[in-house]
Amino acid sequence: MASGDGLVVRVRPPLGRLTLAQARRLARLALAHGNGALELSSRANVQLRGIAPGRHSAVLRALAAVGLLDADAARERRRNVVLDPLHRPHEGVAAMGRALQQALDSADDLQALPAKFGWAIEGAPGRLAGVSADIRLQRTSSGWLVWPDGREQALAVRDAQQAVAVCLQWARWFAGHAARCRTQGLRPGRMAAVARSLPLPPGMAWQALHAAQGQAPAPGWVPGLGWLAGAPLGRLSASALARLLRALPPQAGLRATPWRMLLLEDTAAGPPRPVWWAAAGLDHAAEWITSAEDPRLRVSACTGAPGCAQALGPTLALALELAPQVPPGAHLHVTGCAKGCARQAPATVVLRAEAGDGPGPVYAVVRQGRAGDVAMQRQAMAAVRDNPGLLFSEK
Ligand code: SF4
Image 1 (cartoon, rainbow, N blue to C red):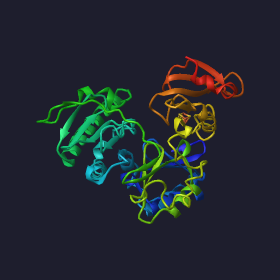
Image 2 (cartoon, helix red, strand yellow; image 1 turned 30 degrees about the vertical axis):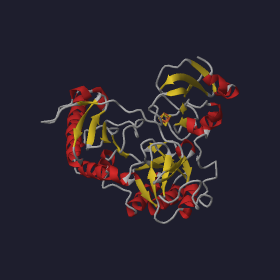
Image 3 (cartoon, protein in one colour; image 1 turned 180 degrees about the vertical axis):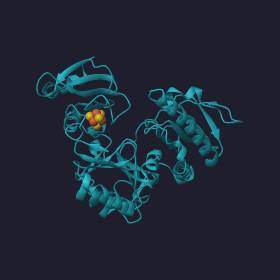
């Protein structure tokens, strides 16, 4: 994807996991060809930014050499599956992910699916509650639920084979819907808008479902799995990643998460701290978030200016500067325009850059809403910075 600062290269780690060698390659590529940082996305992808168009082929060859490149762009696009990063072996999430990805890989009749059409596979109810998905697969005590977004009903199936068959049937149905919309000059939208019309596979019945409320986990020890460590605003310097990789035990891997954190696999590295902690640089607060109380967990921001050509103002530094003002339980999202790339969920306050009358941008203040929602007021950046507390005290 082209952006204001060069190409953005999105890497979907296979089944949500990177080996140390793969992660090392990404760090080297970010340093050699990119802007020296990696972005952890809200769909558990890892992105390189600032790639010069002339280096694109070299980057793709390097990704292919470590198994991080799909056969073609269409397959990569279809493989829009977020796996529950906290899954345990007995939950069968990885096996389900493998089965779904293999089916999507060979489903060449899904070309009409919108680029954002996505899937989520949960090992327990609510673990990916904040992650958008058109079709969600949820582990139960007796099998799986297949749940289309927009319905409070799901289908209960016994195994991965049956679940994948339902998924593919619904995806084909939605692809047909999308193709018909486009021939009429309409946008196909997402599953939530049409899920009430979904065909029921023969012999199956809807079962009522109450969506589990889930929250993003906090950084720290995940018993039996490893350590969750975040990067401020999901941006991790390649040098910090390289240092971490040198310190981790060789059998470790990294699981990408949709919470802008990495799960550092090491089942034996329980609290208070693993032996490799200091060598990994995890005490370096400018690079890592390792405490649940860190106020930077309460802010998010899209790339903004100058990295994004569509941005009407800067976002990243402002979000970090305002983080200490965001009360516990609240969330501030700073966006460079109304598109809302970096956060789909509502936030307590959204600051949206807009063109002002003067030389600099103004920031529209949306309360309890999303990037594109109606603003209550507009403020110059200086006013926001001078009185940041007002953002969370005004009604
Ligand atoms: S929300 Fe707008 S400004 Fe921000 S990255 Fe997306 S397109 Fe760019």
